[in-house]
Length: 174
Image 1 (tube, rainbow, N blue to C red):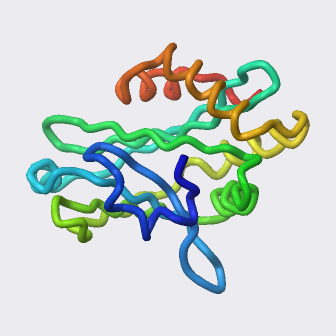
Image 2: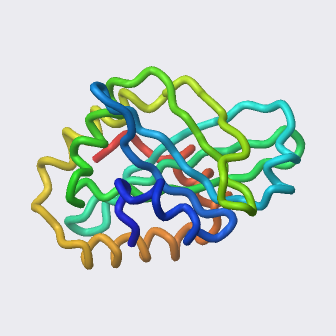
Image 3: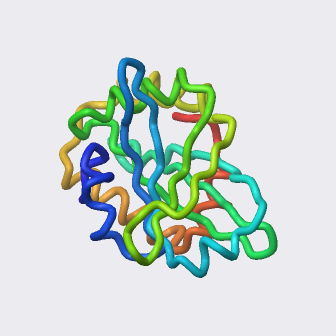
């Protein structure tokens, strides 16, 4: 699994339709999303905005967090990012999501360079505050435990559209 901090350097290894997040900027780092997509799809977005939602899925003693965003005027595309609170550096990223007012979404096309950027108001600040409160109460899990729990969530909601519906209907964090 790609670490969030490596996302900018490793955008070229992503397949079209895959998204990652990372922490960027100083002195007050912000979470940014990077998406690898075909250039034709990026151009097809047209004038549109980004919708964002998140869900926290308790799988045993592991809390799998997913942030799903949707973009597109006529045909919507959904993208899923997976957040492991106990991954190195992730607690800081979760905390950053509680404080930043806007989210940036950078779309990289066929040539691996940024083709478009969208900015949206961050609707997830309260979600991440509640998620942190819930996740710190759980025992620390391993990367393997997280991947196993994530696969369980993926088997329940196998498509980005399914994850969109799952996060839309999900309860507040545990």
